[in-house]
Image 1 (tube, rainbow, N blue to C red):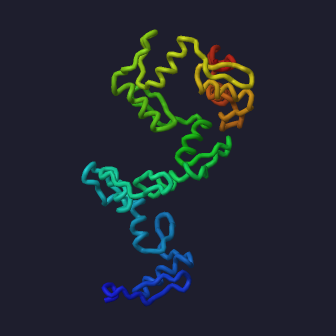
Image 2 (cartoon, helix red, strand yellow; image 1 turned 90 degrees about the vertical axis):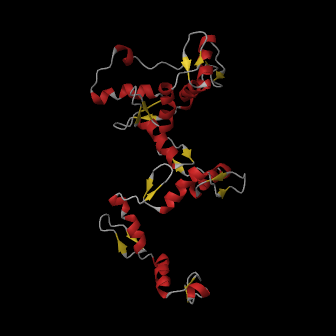
Image 3 (cartoon, rainbow, N blue to C red; image 1 turned 180 degrees about the vertical axis):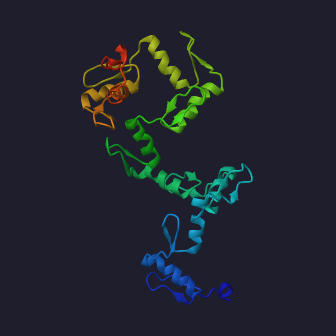
Length: 273
């Protein structure tokens, strides 16, 4: 009857929360004591609720009982299924109180708020660079390791990030429509075409304020600046030696693999122009 009357006679003396049943209070008390009596027999992870252990077991069994009726994707938990459905419905229940932006996940709102607070909790241990998202740090670390786990199935070119591969695939999946009228080269991205055209006209709009050297691309200037700052973000994982350019690291790695470099590649990497 307490379900209907709303009566909750069992109160937690630590936080004041009330419950209709003593059993519910006992389970709640585990949040204060840290007790986790329900143990996974496969990995040893503990849980306060038996139901939570039951859901956890799907990690090991691979069971995904919740299926999306629109795209067929399956999920092990109802919570992740509900979040996925917002992709189809367009629902964005979480709103930023500072700028009004809406997102479909609470975690996405937490990440977005860092735009306003300036918080960057993820730090590269090699370079010291800080990031707002864990995924960005993982992708950044591949710059140092040279890892490129995302490979194009058509040309076998590797990429450090999935979005880079997705953009690259457009080259194969659709005909390039942006053409350089000087050399006929085709591009799928307008910004890439603009950067390419600069190489024909000899324009070098990016200037180093230390030595006056000019570069045709911002990325080239950033690489050049490492000469002045001493920054060497590309580190060999085998011996710890660092380099200013990724190509220099790749050539260096042959020392460990015993691969004999060609005469051209053994020449010292030239300064970026």
